[in-house]
Length: 328
Image 1 (cartoon, rainbow, N blue to C red):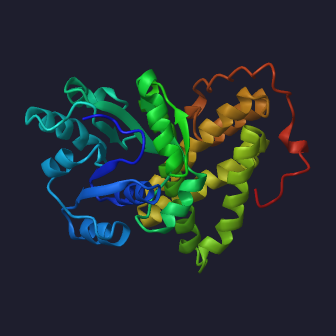
Image 2 (cartoon, rainbow, N blue to C red):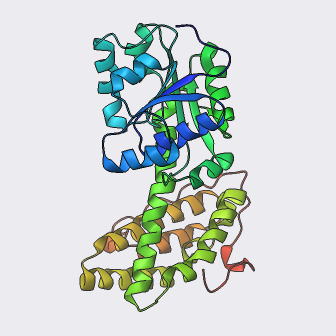
């Protein structure tokens, strides 16, 4: 099958939140969606809403019809799906085969490549709702793209057509790339949920209204200024405050049975202190005091070694930072 320079017949395998939205984006760019697989009722509803008029077909029929097959399935299901279709001789020479997994590059598509297919990895760095509002969000979205050098322009062009920005990720770097995204997005949700729970447990009726402005400002500052935007008791070396936090959270864990919150606070506090010290934002004495407050120098044991400061980073005393507020 020859690769056409213009519009393609696109087959979507997996009408989950990602597959249905990307199918709709490709359709809006002028490509024809020739079929979609949808097993669950939620997937069928999503396909009907985002891809009206597109037939729901079995996977082998979609692969047979499509010039571009988009595999939008869970990471762990991808290798078996690709190899299973290869075993039946489903893949076609010249056919574009793209997956949306963050973890994998194109090596996972080796069985399709062996049949002459063109392998692409197109991972959107965005969380999806599976609704039409996701289409507008694609305009601010980047995709991690991986492909053989000669085929990379095809992957990049498809992403641009969907309204997003392609970012090239090397095959060997895909797992770290995906870990970075999961660490930031997934764990941010966990942190927000934990903070909201604490506020709810002390009677705050609308934790989101209290947290929203603070979190949005923190995220924007961190994206703009990196760790230079760091504030709060750990960065200032307020070991007494950190100790009080830890004690209160341990008591809360005993009262509620939710020990994950104090565990997360202690782990993130230690990491924050280490990174602040490395950048010269936290002096050695205060660094060790904060680590002790977090319980990291068990009864006289040797305290964690002070990490060397990055030479290019000026050493400032956060206590003298006029920008910090009591809300930090």
